[in-house]
Length: 389
Image (cartoon, rainbow, N blue to C red; front, side, top):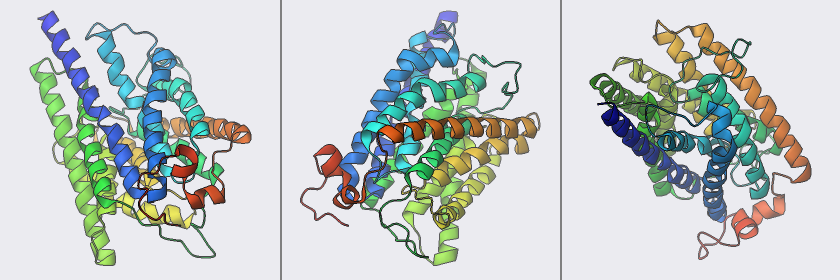
């Protein structure tokens, strides 16, 4: 029976890892559809680069820093590593999407090394891992099953630091005006968002850790059902709000509402009954709708809405566990959100500022006008189309 559990849980981790890797093309397609055609190859290249560089650095350095060792008695240690490796690139994916259309690849690759080898593993260490800072003020009791804070708001805080350093895209904000830059390929946006949605079932379901008993199988099934419910609620409420406000159904906002609901539920999908995720996801979707214009008002240029989806709902989702689960302390949840936020933002800002001093992150106006595909990749995604300005 022990061998049976070991085998089943190893298979489960590998299957969940595979679903999570579907989020790599998910992010790539979503971002490629939301940017202009002249920057699509650059976005796709960045997403592939992030997966390769972040995964390699986590393999070489980050995993041991996060968990202390590779030993695992519940399943194959290789499966346990692969499951955790599938998460690491998402923190940089969140950041790269929000600085699309002006970020240069080499400095982003350098930051990816630092994030995957040090920043993210330290966050994991004090929350899920070896807890090397036990009995200090960073000894966290925060509950975060699959990473509303550990992954999503970690990526969001790094993105906020990057936007503050890089500034907006060329021509995005004028005197009292905001230039609307429409998405280039809505079908790709839909494909990317739905791939992310599917990947979330491995993201959250796999984080339960076991499926080899009746109790754990029920926990996995409840977790995946609650995850899906929150996504549904986020999409529905975003669509309703957009129609009430503008008499239009904006598919990009509906999808971001769904993603906001999915981020929000990620902290505690295994703890809620089957109805609470409707509220958690609906609030998440509503927060996205209201946060997107707020960030534009603050001139924080985010082409894909990553701050609204991942940072805002990473915070909300973590706090929601403390609000809706009586056994979880709201104060502990808030402490985790605040301390991890301060750590990630401050360290990311310092690292980004240092890299930017030697290798500027932001492409200059002339390169942005021509497009990053030509200047960074030498390969245009749509060479037969006239590039937009």
